[in-house]
Image 1 (spheres, rainbow, N blue to C red):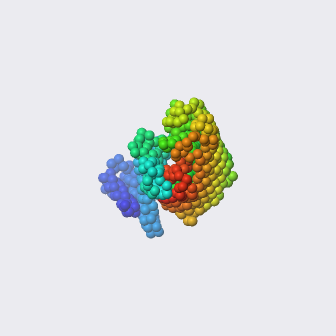
Image 2: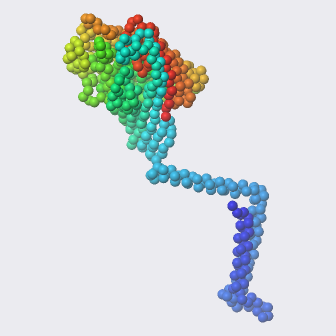
Length: 537
């Protein structure tokens, strides 16, 4: 960049030269023959007095030029070129800001510049805040090893056939979630789906039903905020029952939820939910198609699991015409005397988190559709009809200590069966879990869980008890493990080992948890070793 001082000098000298030249051209004769000035004569339209004034102005400009030159020399001596550099930097910043603003507008393909980026998930938003779309995903990749002393002699049996040791890898959960709001923050939505892990033992998977990599819908709902505390939700969602089930699988402490929860949680259904959340209390009430529990009644030779009278029926994604329930209500109440609600988003409590405490109580009542029958049942008669009333309750307590946590839960279910098999009038089950964790470092956490469950069919007196049918079953299991948080819950490595101390019956076995049914009272403890890598994005 040229020197300002030199520029000023060149400019003023040039002006002086041009003015003198102009004066000479305009005055062909400045003095008369006698060397006197003719004050009345004109010289090229300019009299002598005007020319003198012009020369006087030239002298003033030269004087001003000298003053400016002195000031520039003084400024340069005291601050060097710094003042000029700051000026250039400001100009550059202005240009860059203008270019980026223009580029952002062009990239959005609209004049109002829609925003996009990352904030705990990718998002797109309108500049006025009325529309928001957030996209996030999860993948859980596992290695599972199972050992049992008892094996079924049928090699095609889902229990693993003759193989006492069984291990392998799987993509346990691969999910995508779309959520946000439309027409303002009060109308919210969520759509979540996953690529199915498949059905154990199925030789030819049915991709249309979401088996082995097929995509299936999990949640799809819309919620409208009636007030700051009250909201109404409609669609498909988890029933407000078990806290362990309501916490996302991405924020569990143990690699998989407890076997007791797997047996007694109600799963997803379709319907309406009224919800309230204040500073210390929350309450939910849902009216849906119904819930299901994994408490099977095993029919000889088929392995079919019956809930009341229905084969283990998934009420999610079901059309209106499928046999469901005459009515079904679920309600959950939570009291939080300490901490904030966000603390209970996860089953764990990282270091630095403030102390929090919460108690939960939930209940469920459901009446099966009248006149239903045992589909696929071959005895006593294919067309036997029945009615089932189903009650369930659960209670839980959660304590977050900021680096440690404790969780306790209990369940009880009762099914009143009008007619199922001869002299069978009801079935019931109950279970309890105790779980805790401790952070050894901000990234390393150890955990332990103990659980017990019991299930009984009452009044069972079927002649010639069919092979493979167990009127009751107990569960006693323990799990020990650790989590290493590479980047919080977003990137996590986990490993644990689980042991059972009695027979693993159909009622509590869970393939996703790594357990196979023993179906023998002589069975020794099962051992399950699991490792998992979790990535949230």
